[in-house]
Image (cartoon, rainbow, N blue to C red; front, side, top):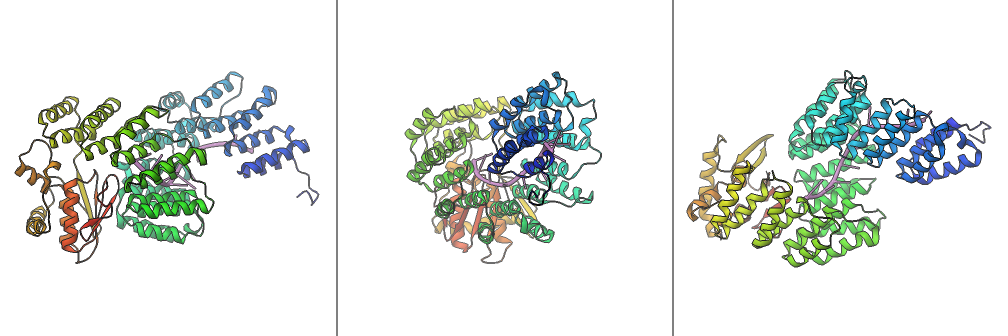
Length: 585
DNA sequence: GTAGGGTTAG
């Protein structure tokens, strides 16, 4: 351009700067602007501020803004710095500037509000966000798609999905991004996966052509549904849409979708075929492999990732540490945990500590767990206490388990799984009175146990089984089938483990209850209704019970079937009488 | 010249 003899003005530099996201380029352009005197243009300063913000260099942006002073600033300068604070998750700071701006006589526009709201969404600040929303209700701004998407995003990320929908419905003509925000909001909530799909279709009916982001959002909604046939269906839609070749994030979402549907080998194939990868691609496949118990492969891939020059992130380490936890690799886990800070400059957050607690707890190293908790730079929330409680149950550490359960109940009083686990622990140790006390506490507080349910998809129909419930139309056949198999199971070494029966049952009654566990019913139904040797997949909302785990191992041996059960934590792949988790879970 | 949505874990 310069060689062609055309003048480079402030506007050109602004345009170029805003098109550049890499920080080195922004710094270079900044240098160029200073040298050529173009930095006297406000528009250039504004764009440089945005450029620095996108490059996560908050201080540089702040310096530019401070140097400008009130005489140079325009309302766009204010909008830019507010957006930068939003990108860094500083909601309250964005709000302060928003108020400051008004005090100094600058008028806020839709652009300003969209940025402030997005800042609150990023910082999950429902209180401040709602306050701002209330002040907007009388005005025209809530009908602006940019402002509305800030509201939808805020409410969805803070868990108020109904309010997200309300904010969406205020807008007469939603644009593509607003639709995507709604779909993404639904996809964040497991119970609203169906709505994510419905919105995706509604958006198409409204005449919009989904972009890469729409696909990413709807695919992550599908991932929560864990329905293999629907997973394949959306893959077909992606391929047909022709969007797939160019968008790495769509592929990454598909990798997760296949993993969560129990098809980790398909996920791996997809990953292997990628011509372009990024850190998230690695994070996705490492997570998938870890959840399926392929710890060695996950860790090998992690090493491959490092060798190929990809920088791991905090999320990478969550998968890596959970791979170690699932496979009992204590020393390796410590090595990776320590390398986070030392080698990669990543400060471990509570999730990482929680993985370490899980790793050490499963390995029965409770002393090390307590030391780690003492050394932590913050106090544990239920995120960390939950795996510890699980480990205490596995190893029968009643005292520490009771403490963990108390802490969880204190921190999140409506948590229903902690008291159930605790009362089961007491019950399996024969401490019935204490078990009953916990049950009473649950009743008093109105805490209800989440019913265990398992489901299996056959011919695109999802069959749901709830423990001890007889609502499935063919439930009698299922019981007959299990009855018919019980002798073979006994001969193969199955002994019912009544420690997993709830409450104060007599042994015989406990055994009956075990037989009614939802995962056994779903597995039996699968075996009855599929061809010989056909693998089956069962999904469960809670963790698989120890007795079912043992029973399904034996069933896989006597029926020569590959049976995969995905519970709330991970996948168990049973075949020839053993499980991919090697009984370490 | 400035603004809104996305993938990964638990």
